Image (cartoon, rainbow, N blue to C red; front, side):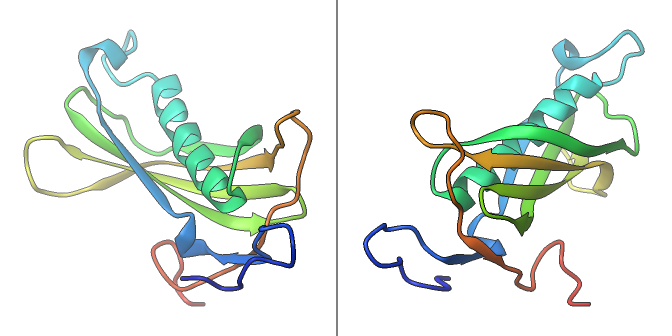
Length: 152
């Protein structure tokens, strides 16, 4: 869905909807991802979350965006080898050059249909950068109904 056409002369859109940057990344966890306790290392989950958030931020910015901060990261349940993790990322806010991305991680067994459990959540901030690594403007954000939004 296109909210606004490109602005005059720059090719940068003035606004984009949340659905345009929504991303889901999935990865099957293996024994190589486990920690000393036999569960998946938190850093592995964090990387998947950062990758999904970066993809969402890059889609919104129409180009490179770098992680500036991890504002919140919460681990809700352990993950085990054989779990299929899915990281669902969506923009919550867009400023002049920065974007806040919410990520929700779910787990299910890779080889069976069944219940899906929410295992982690997070909020990360990104800044769009130009070819020289300097901050550059991003489109404003139009929040739409959809996954992650309850309409309230």
